[in-house]
Every structure is written in structure tokens, then in C-alpha cells.
Length: 72
Image (cartoon, rainbow, N blue to C red; front, side, top):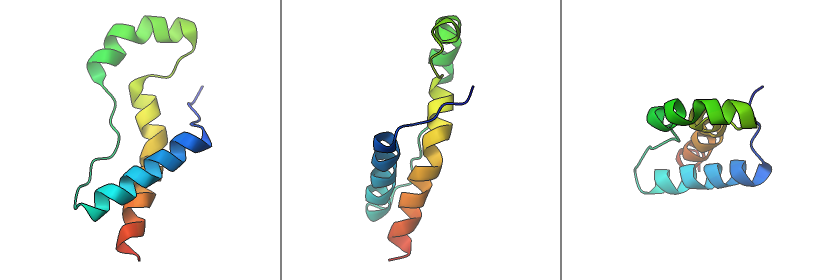
């Protein structure tokens, strides 16, 4: 089951990408391998997404926001 972020999360990722581009940074969301490893059994039982799944789902919105600054 793939993680589907809310519209609010997507908007926040887009805004962060836009603001980072204004500051000359590129720092898309990343997962935390250690946290995912430690909490994988609990996440699986609870049906929660891993940090990597969340990051992957939000990365495209971040990149779109980052690109929007360059296209203005």
C-alpha cells in the first residue's frame, strides 16, 4: 500500500521547495534508514508509512516548488 500525502502536506513540500530555491538550496525530503529499520515491525502492524515512503511521496511536490522559482 503506497502512502498518499494530504493536500496540506503536498502544499507544504511545494512551499519548502520554493523557499529553498530562493535561498539557493536543494534539500528534498529524505527518509531515515535507521528509524525505518528500528520501527519497521511496528509500522507494518500499524499500517503506518515508513519515513522513506513519506519522503518519496512528497519529493515530487518539493521538486515542483523548487523548479517554479527558476521558471518565474
